[in-house]
Picture 1 (cartoon, rainbow, N blue to C red):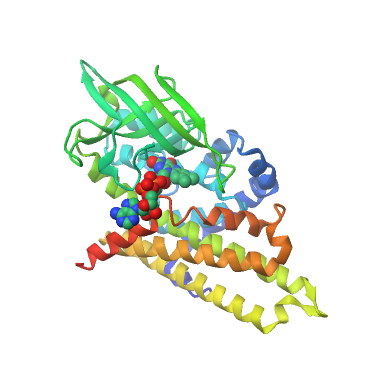
Picture 2: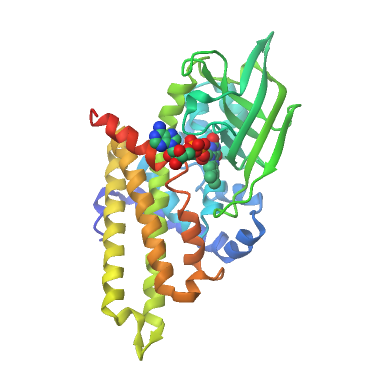
Length: 381
Ligand SMILES: Cc1cc2nc3c(=O)[nH]c(=O)nc-3n(C[C@H](O)[C@H](O)[C@H](O)COP(=O)(O)OP(=O)(O)OC[C@H]3O[C@@H](n4cnc5c(N)ncnc54)[C@H](O)[C@@H]3O)c2cc1C
């Protein structure tokens, strides 16, 4: 049994195995082509839903598979065996777009948006970041002004995962002047007049996932599309961040674990000066350090997920796990590329892709610096 597996029961292990089987059959054989093409087939959402790997962590009443934070980690681990973060985050954009809708307990919104997304019939995205603001959410300028039975929305959103082909975007808008209390969530549908994709953005990594800059030009959004209470957007977002950051921690340790496995395989096969690269003491120490980092990152994240499962307040620890795992991913991928020598710089190797993908982890979903601010604040500093 692996060191950290004592956190898991049979349901977690079965889910990890079935998701991995899905990824090995339906993603990994096509990973290179989809990454180079910068997209994956839309049908994959349906396939993933039918295989029971899309709605993990969402309540069954809303069309999900049930399960808690540890189950979510298992699905990310399994899917990442497809060897493309781009596909995993593309499929996973519902993980950040749907919780505000489901937690609102608004049956109409759940029926119209959450259920079809969890069934793989609709693609969704979360729209928070704007061209002018990211870390500072209180700077959101996209405005929603009431006009009869509608909100009229104008503004722009930036770096939106799955935003190019999303059917709807769970969007943070400004409904009032108070920096935090004036924020609300609206579901904006792609086919509403005035919604457009300004740009499909080219990125360092995560190639198979689309990333959009979106424009809203006097979009008339019915009042029924308000998620939760007007003015409660900031509180909802802070809650949403906890799951997103836990997921990003999982992306961190699993990216590192996959890169480590590739590095071990290559170092055992590749010969230099008459012996396998793995036999040099410096390589062994490097691999030992990498394995230590992966074990620590994974253990911390499992522990935090288990505590979240119990309903404990873990804001500080989630931020710690997100930062630690992101750093481990970047470091381990760097060394995995190094152990591959020139091959590590070639697009045909998995470590090259993983090392590019890892770089987003200290930035997305709250930067390393913002995580440290949260940790320090929760230390009473
Ligand atoms: C590939 C990708 C996918 C993304 N997907 C989504 C998505 O689906 N939906 C979405 O809404 N957003 C998404 N984002 C946006 C992402 O969450 C933001 O990029 C991130 O939160 C940082 O915001 P920013 O880019 O505006 O950086 P800024 O906030 O401009 O920060 C710039 C630098 O200043 C530092 N800084 C800022 N404030 C402080 C402070 N108080 N103290 C110290 N340092 C500070 C930051 O740490 C950073 O180093 C995505 C981004 C990328 C690159």
